[in-house]
Length: 421
Image 1 (tube, rainbow, N blue to C red):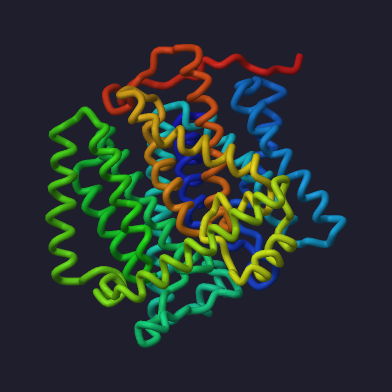
Image 2: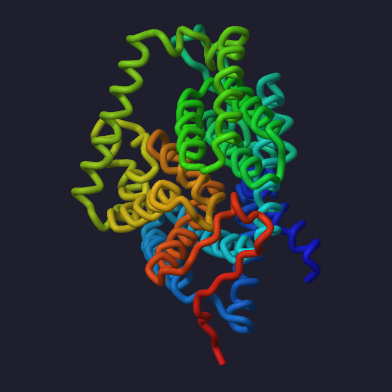
């Protein structure tokens, strides 16, 4: 396949990963990542039998996928439809994430993937804009929103409507849009775009939070910016980013204010009630996961939460711990965290894009049950595969290349291949 075609394929895979449209609106919730997961699964099988796959990352990915497969089979006999859906999506995400891991080894392809993801964030703003002007039914009819999507309100702010976006809930859509920040940082530091990409990325983030009135993506994005800039050796570039962030932040706060207005951020009672409720629900979810360390499936887990007086855990890792067990959740959280911390451990790392995304995702997952989203499941599968590859590379003491220093060097995986003769 010509290089240009491969780059275009990576761009589309990135775009539809975040602009995750509904392919059969009004019939069944069959999304772009579901269809692409099937196609990419067949491609991985073809590649396995013809060229082989990297041994360690894919053996781990296969073993990791056995847990959702096991629970999917149990749910089939128990009639737990939600667990079946989640399990199928985890299996399809393994194919999608594994394919991204393979194709992104080439730096030119990785850049195309980053641009596709970046434009996917922008595409989500378009859907939020339509919802802001109450075109929810239109977006449902053309596959840009789920059939159960509805505008939600914040009661303490005089019923101000929150746009739900493509991913069913305002918090989920705002979290997807916030990925524009690590993507913009990556494109800037690898010299694929000028400082304008940071300005546009921050503008997209602000627009997303204004439409959804979500607070956590702003705070998480600030943390990601600090980690990326402070761990980068390009001092001049980092100073430009921090200066732009400071100036742009002050102007935005003066003219626009924070998402939902100052009342949503400065009211002590609201902050205490919101924070206390989240902590309580997460602790209850953690208690349930410890009582059932091997998992419960979705239906039994939701019933246990209802008996505890909470409707959600507000933590993606606790959420999957309840459904699939502590081992699954701890492995997922540990691998994403290790990848996020890689720039802190070593000043030179091959996986700058994945590390920046891991930093953003890890903290986002501590705020909401984002692993209900097909897009986040694929991202998690891609990052955990990359994390295993990074650990394997470190143990072999391979000299690493830094994308920020050698952006024109193509990366070639050195892992042994698992082949069938």
